[in-house]
Length: 139
Image (cartoon, rainbow, N blue to C red; front, side, top):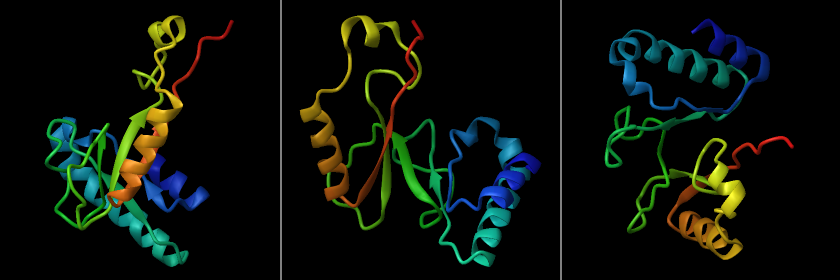
């Protein structure tokens, strides 16, 4: 909690990313609500409009928090229709969020056409695209 509070106070972010927090349910229950409260309260005192992702690692149809709290987020999330709320598609440029030999050796990256389609499809359905560009090996 202290590390996150230090980052919030030093850099004044408007967005807080909390990835897969339901893995440690007891930790979530005891710490996460106060982290969120501290983040939101700090942002309001700075005149910011805070938001956070609302990601459930195990179920693409659910989230960590109640509806309306945070931005629904999933890896490679595709919406069939246009929801009445914002959502986030956390996608990757290739096949991995980290380094992958296959991406390097076989050029396993999305095509420009696929990336444009991904962006247009996400935004046209009231979504936000978070595009991960994974690291490359140094040669």
